[in-house]
Image (cartoon, rainbow, N blue to C red; front, side, top):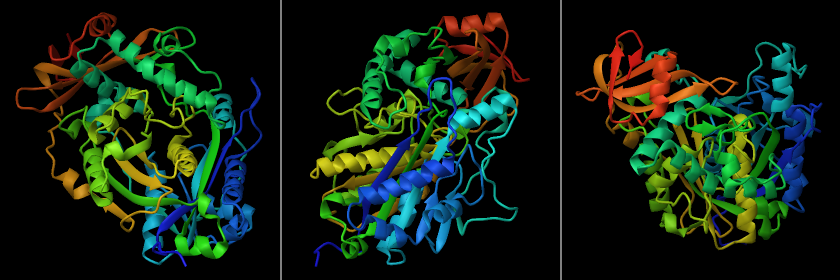
Length: 500
């Protein structure tokens, strides 16, 4: 018998699928097809006993599928696999969902409530995009009205404050540049210097993606190619070029087979396939971006990291394999700063896949791919610790997971540090700000011809309140982008506009 606690949660199988249509073509495969293939690959990856273990799956959890929003995708995956789990689970929207699923299943395994779980998701972005552009339908299978999974994991609400929406802030491409400019200014770099610096370490990510067998981008790009705006790399929202934005138009799926040590032994899963879940942690930062004290910090990541490292008796220096959520470069920087990691350390890149912009960003399911890749690497390097982070909405929802092929020295535990985050300071969002304020950060959205179309500013008043402004005026846009307005004055007009 093993000396390891039999209720220890252990990953025994990982499966990843990337379906690359020929240039100019759209795949005929569906998200269901890719998820089923990934699930079978995870069973095969577990080695002898994997298929038998798949038949014993009790909980089948699927990350919310952006391109195929059926209410209970897990039921369809189970049907195609010919298995009968006692529950199906679907998450709410959020890139933190893979770690939320992992933590949910791991807690139940540790508590003796569950033995075998299958977790993951998949997206077919190329066919979805083609259908949306043509005004047609994907034709993918739907479910009858009233269909529901056994459980929906997580809670959600609209991610933007009305004042943020009025300022032209509505999607990740408008929020994350605000964080980037604040980080850039604190580092003392110009916009061009920041893009060049990002290009240096983003190029290493590009190489990782090109070398990864499941990577979407197959050719590595140089720092100059990534950082220099041009026809094939247009500016999306200042300061980001296209290659610095998560690419959700990909066809990718990934699944994880998670069991107890007891179930893995009973199924005869070879020990060299085992990767232990040492701990998980999660919290959300103050929900609306405008409420947060600092736009270049994340109390939720910091508190999650402290809890996870304290629980396992480790530090950031003990982690050899890392994948920080990388929807945009600022997400990596904020995560690294809060966890005590170095962003541009060539000896320890903070990605094992190449990230969402280059490996592929299959909506909410990217982190299933990063966990699968970390598990694969951990098997090759059994003495090393591996850390994954996950992010939902606008640096809002966060999750961390610590893995290793070496058994944990303390029992698995999940750490919900929400109370710690909720106790941190907040800011008041002004409803109709007017007068002279101080620019905190800014961005501008570009049209497809490469011209700035909408500018947004975030500003603070003398009382620390936060206000937002929006402009489409060409002259104001030119001034906004022609110099660094951060920490300078801005006139907010009380009607949502601004002038510099």
